[in-house]
Image (cartoon, rainbow, N blue to C red; front, side):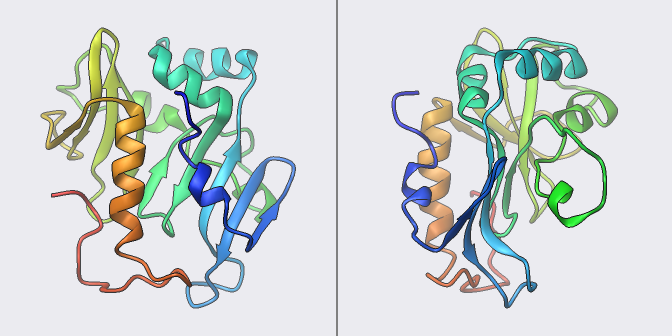
Length: 188
């Protein structure tokens, strides 16, 4: 990845920078401590190896490089979540500011017909659909919770982030309110 996928989001001056995360654009209409975007600090190579051990496979290079920059994110009030290494399962507020675990969709709730080389790394809250990439296959794919049959395809991880951030940006106002709550936040 030549450019940071969340570079434009991080330009927002209305943010809180903490040790392990950045919170961007408060959304008090959602909840008192809610933010439009939560982006988590990248992982060391040892932490990535720990995550790979948890999901029982190596990450494709493009995804490996992404996790060196970011340990996942919650974008557009959770409309799109990028999973990562969950370091702590405590329920206090600070501990809750971390990504969903990649172990859930890759091991615990793995789709039965998923290709063996598929690595699930995120999903959409609207319909529970998932995003994944595969070793040896170019692109990022979206599928529903029951079948790994692709519903959408992007040519690369960079393309996925660029297109989805642009598309989702059009569905939310500058203050983080969803413009039309009845409009699906998943791609067509």
